[in-house]
Length: 82
Image 1 (cartoon, rainbow, N blue to C red):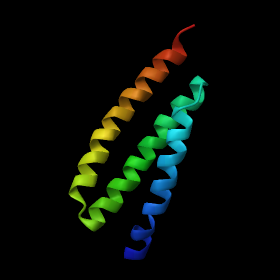
Image 2: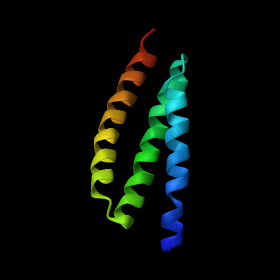
Image 3: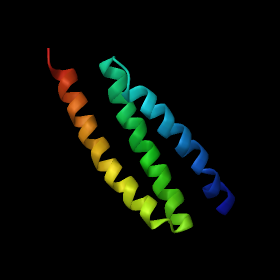
């Protein structure tokens, strides 16, 4: 099981990069998807951080996760506008 958790850093990194790419899109739905992918990466990093006792990383991911929730709300509000 520790090997599986150690391996989480790679999909977490890939999700972070994919999310950054999506958030930079000009299309609203891609930006919104990017914030959701960022939230997934936050969860993966937190799981990995707990395993490795990387407390600063966990704190960073919680903070970034809150910012990503804000981003989701803003893009959903933007998508709801005519």
